[in-house]
Image (cartoon, rainbow, N blue to C red; front, side, top):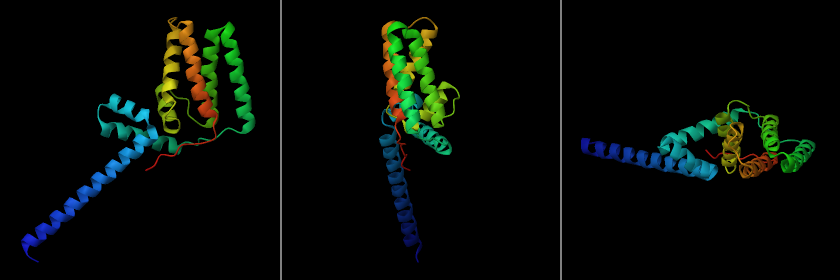
Length: 182
């Protein structure tokens, strides 16, 4: 084989390899975007770079994959649903306590499902894997709880926190788990 032919073959192999790499990378990006939805866009804004954002989302997915996340039995879901109704009713007379208890109730459901209860940012990152469409509700409710602790949350803020917590709570009670396509 002549040198020019060998160079052409090597260049063609390299070109096809690069094309394959770009296609695989694009498919991975699409899969992450479809899975994480708004969390994908949020992570890109936060990281400032799509590659770093995607690496973080994949890291989250691998971490959660190692956890033993399980659905709640029907009787526990019913018990938690009743507890939630009680907190909603409590809101009328004591919104501050209802929001604090709603936060505790959500954390209890997360714990029972198998999510580790480390710092808030890690909990939100873990939740984003299986509940990507509602994790922002969790962040918003947590922010209101933080303002409540400082005495800076009005009754309307507390009402919004209950709505945010309810959205996450209902999603956590469902039996399904979301799978990340790789």
